[in-house]
Image 1: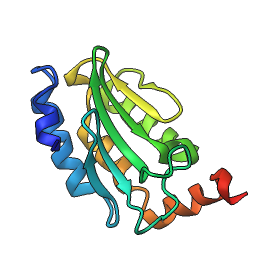
Image 2: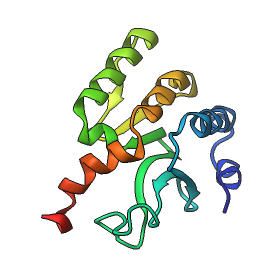
Image 3: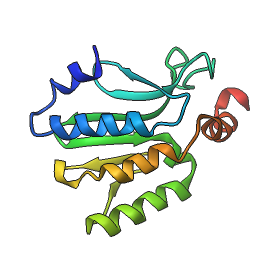
Image 4: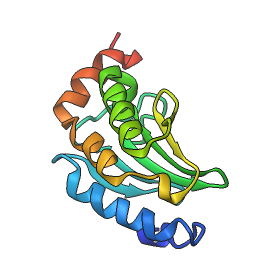
Length: 148
């Protein structure tokens, strides 16, 4: 399944905005991340060729960086980089809240949007471009339980 095929399965109200966000993320993503679609989510990952161990929870899967999913609750954007680098999470939160005039709905590695008009592509684009593959791996590898 392609990213576009997945987007077409999501609620119509989300399709134009997610299409635009995916295009923006494609342009913003640092070199080395690859776009994938697993039939449920659109992901940008570090491929096994770059990090052979893959994701520690499922080594057969490449290491995820950012992924998007739409469900009943809206759009969820996951970013492990924020989890590993709290200063990046705080920078996103501060810029989003100043621009949107509302509190960011966030967890440790997840940003949730209940309505399409709550999404701020420019802030998600900035978030995506902030972490190179090399920086991501420098933070992830020491936390990978297989490396301890």
